[in-house]
Image 1 (tube, rainbow, N blue to C red):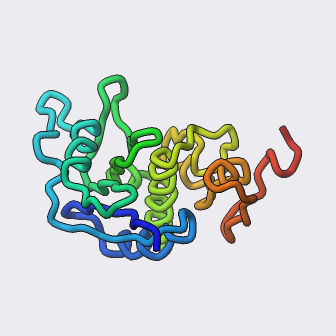
Image 2 (image 1 turned 30 degrees about the vertical axis):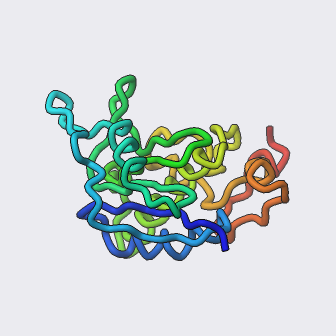
Length: 194
C-alpha cells in the first residue's frame, strides 16, 4: 500500500470540504488520504502588519508535524495566506518536496447564489488541493488553463479548471495518459484551438 497523503486541517474548515478531499484525492494521485486534526500549523505564522498568515511558515510547521508515514502533507486552513512577494496566495507548496499549504479563505469569494454554493466551494478547494499536491509531486504550472496545474488568478479561474490533471501533467505524474474527469470541459488544447 502506498504512503498516505495527509491533510492537516485547522479549525473552521467545513466537514464537507474534508469529506470531499478524502473521497476525491485518492483517484487523482493513487494514494490514500488521511486527515489530521488538532495540529497547530498556524503557530508563529501570523504577520501583524499584513494581518495574514505567512504560507512559508505554515509549510515549515507542516514539515515539523507531518507523520513519518506520510508521502505528502498539506495544511488546509481557513485563514488568509501570503508570501512576501504577493498580496495573497490560495496555496503554496514545495516543488518536488513533501509539504504545502492551502487556504480556503479566498475560495469563498464570488460564490454563485442558489443551492449549489457549497458544491462550488468544495470543488474549488479540491481543484486547489490537486494543484498544491501536484507541485509536491514535481509538477510545475501548466499552460493548459483548464488543467488544475495552471496558475489561478482568482476564484473564477479556479471554477474553469478541471479537478484532474490534463494528459500532459498526468503523463509527467505517472507516465500514463489521463482519463478525463467527468467534469472536465473540453480544453482548447485538446480541441485544437491553440
